[in-house]
Amino acid sequence: MKTEQAKPKIYVAPSANRKNGIPNRYFRILKEELIPFFDVLEADNAPCLMQGLALIRNSLRADVCLLSFVETIPFHKLGFIQYLMAILSLAIMKLRKCVVMFVFHNPRPHQGENWMTRSLIRKQLAISEAVISHSKECASLAREMLSASGKDASSVHYVCHPLYYTSEVAEVEKNDEILIWGNILPYKGVLEFVSSDAVRDAGLKVRIVGQCKDADLDLHILQALSIPSATSFIYENRLPDFPELSRLIPASRWVLFPYLPGSISSSGVLMDTISMGGNPIGPAVGAFLDLEEEGMCAVYHSEQEMVGLLKSNGNTMSDRRKAFMERNSWHSFADFISNLYHHAR
Image (cartoon, rainbow, N blue to C red):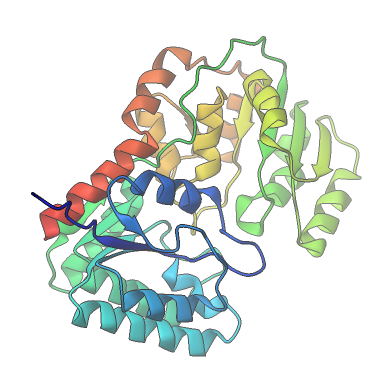
């Protein structure tokens, strides 16, 4: 009688933290989709004391480590100590011959970069059997870095960011609003957008619905909006739920991402917008440019071009949406990771 072979143990970093739990839904959903293929460590998402400690603990027991945002650890509390913990954990993974996969989300952390962040990116690239990026731009950067260090760049894989939903979206009549949604952070360019003379003179209707926890940023946005302009703005500093977004997104003419260049490469908010039937528009960088090639996103190369697009009617993408989502589902991404693991073994 054959006994069922034990599944390999996988650790998906980052762990849940004490303050906010899982940083975003990407990791919660990814863990759920990996369960058919792996024994998922920390599947219950119990909060950890420090990310550095979680890395060390799981490096001692995992067969495969799927690493995201390890390079942001220097910005956590006791950053240098946690940096040393991360370095130790990467050394343990290499010593134990774990299969390491590095999900290279952004060219540099949103918080900035320093010698510790650059060191962690280089070390993850050096020990990884596979490097996964959700934008061709970031994948090219990873290949350049590997080639420059004399390492094989064939381990780098571009995989479109998986989508959260696969259900059909009812056709709704478009209004003339431009929607900006999601957490409002400096790199997302909301302040620069509402302060732009070209935008303010364009006579648009803009609705901004998103949580801004940065009091200074919120104040500067409010100050910019207090100046009369031809464009009308509605600004709501709050976190909208998905039932509300499922109404706002498909009804808006455009869903705008005025992101600043530099740290952004892929975007889960962009994928949510597509899955809920929205017409996204963003800068011609990273995943925005990739999805423009697939006919799922419009891009701009300048402020003038952005304003011109926002004045135009939004494109309908419903005919391409279903096939795109089926091709880039969460299940297909988990299956891809499983295949990478078995190939590495």
